[in-house]
Image (cartoon, rainbow, N blue to C red; front, side, top):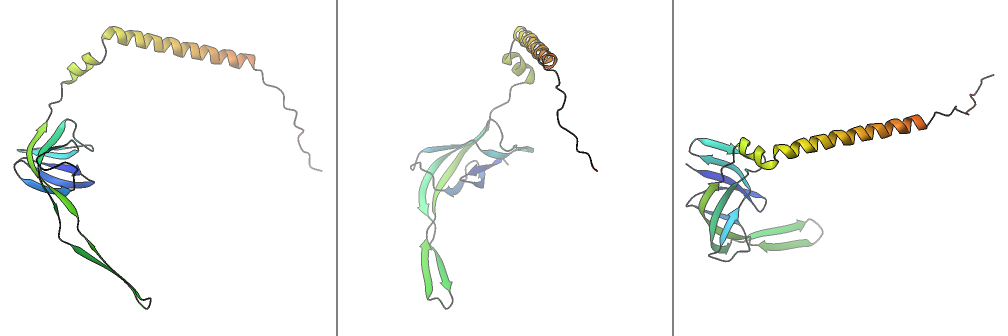
Length: 161
């Protein structure tokens, strides 16, 4: 059983391939495709992957089936002895999405990543330049300390009689 927990509109939904989910209204029209990259948890067969906070490279693709409104909810406000009564209705708008595919990009091996980041020659140069700049900074701070001599304090100490 494969499924994913996605975040859409500040809420979390369980997405399974082939099923439909009702999410808060999306701006896409019917028939448009939707993709979520905020995958919080992914279960593939017996392998569970938990994101921190999301899983890098994971995505859920779907297709908008319809836009609809939920049944009306009545909100009634009332204050005793104040002649204050308000009756308000609300219909939340939703989008029905058919989940097509749950996919994960395979991460590259660590050896490949470290080779691609910077060649060994550049690493040596950057380390040597870092050492030389730190040596220069230490020398300049030593010069500043030697040039500024401490002045004797001119404050008179209070004596008690």
